[in-house]
Image 1 (spheres, rainbow over the protein chains, first blue to last red):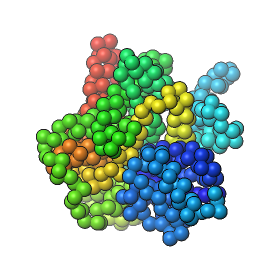
Image 2 (cartoon, one colour):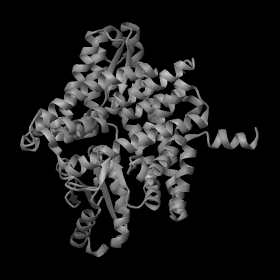
Image 3 (tube, rainbow over the protein chains, first blue to last red):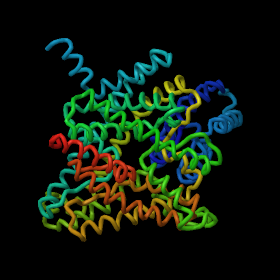
Image 4 (cartoon, chains in turn brown, green):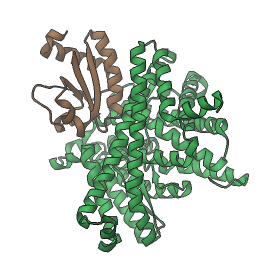
Length: 99
Length: 433
């Protein structure tokens, strides 16, 4: 099972909406995933039990995370199609056996 | 105790059980498996109880500072923080605090109805920002109850009607500006500074040129630590709590501190306040995640393709430097506002918090920058910071609470709404509760 982490400013609004969208996206891609959300300030604490972090480029630059974690960034986190493409690509590249 | 009383008081009268039931029903309505519905309900209940722990800690810590301030200076301290305001108004509502949950449900239902009849109402957007909905509906419920002293059903219905119109109209006017900023994304902002954002979008071009885009400016990299909510919230509270404690004087603070050194005590109090807000946030996040799941699912079933109004941070990625500049502009404006209040010996002392300082002005900064570049963003967020302090002071005073939203709309539009309800209450000779 893949562990996804959505990160935004307060870990409240945007990351929660993204989390909801991701559940639909994962169903469509056939990826078995557990999705969590948090604020940029907390990301490191969560990142050690995470496979993929999803956030904007700005937050992505700021947060610290272990090397083995894959970072997916998008300027518009509300763009479901773009997120689906990026996630699908990341899963194929890094987690092919989970697919 | 009768069975009805047991159901209404002991079960439905407890916020954590009531919200858990709502989430449970929401999941079942969306045909999710039972295990998921039960899990969601439990997480909601835990979230509400975590929130309660944060609220208790907040009231204890903040109260400890407020009492000596009011004794020494005769000033009432008001904390500008979103979730603390909900705690304060729920305290005021006391045994009626669960009314606020019905207001949230009915506001959502009215919002859907207004969008369903969009041909006539011209309202097109569904508000899905659960964290904001929770807080706003709680405060609106108390506004109605405070000034009209109505019973449950009219209070809930009046508050919901006002809420739904505010959500629909204000998130609606931002549909076009958001499209412009995001290059065609189909969502809008449903938050707490929608008027401020709209004004910034409308007058931005008068204050500067869009070619002077803030994204071309390089900020020192250390400033980005203020985008870390834990760091920023602690630093801001530490500064303002520090100022207040210094104003009280070493002797009083040492008296409060007991055997702890007074400097260490100031440090610890500032951080403890930040911790309380952090626990509140954690609780809200846990329950809101579950609530939004149901809201989004239900609105998509009833009104597929409606424009969704989401958290303001959704547009931050499109202009990250405008976010930072807006935060700085707002912070400077708030500090100037607070100093002014002290200088004119106002009866209210404002303690700014991170959420209204950062999220409101970052959002207004993005809209202002789009139309008028960095100059417009700097000027408008500075003005917004000042307005947030003054407007919130008046609102908190009128509402008799020691915490206020602090966000732009709640220091402007809602000040007007409070005035209207106060006026109506006055006509009927009702004294505020």
